[in-house]
Image (cartoon, rainbow, N blue to C red; front, side, top):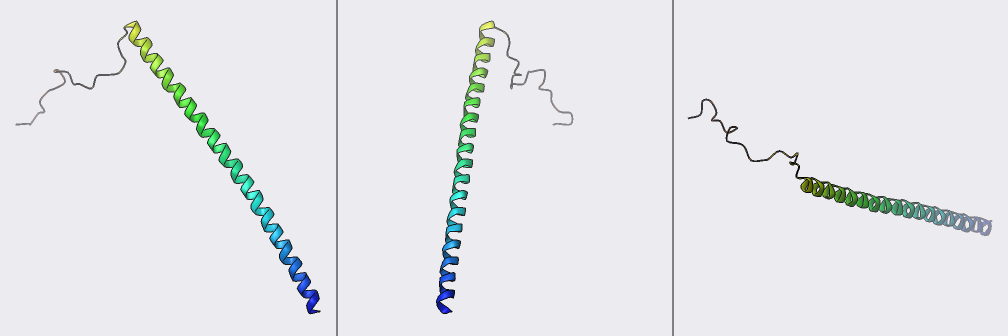
Length: 89
């Protein structure tokens, strides 16, 4: 009987080993697929950001050519805005 149990134990170990190997292979394939997907999406986002920057630069150039004033408010305060605070000495 000891030989029979030893055979079952070896088969069980081999089956478990094959199962674990298969599971690890599936996990590796899934992680590789997710990794590829993430890299593709990051590349796509990079391209979109580059396109957006180019569009912004094109709009800036158009606005400069047309001579229209920039919609951005100047960061320098006007002399009228520089009023002394009440109660200041």
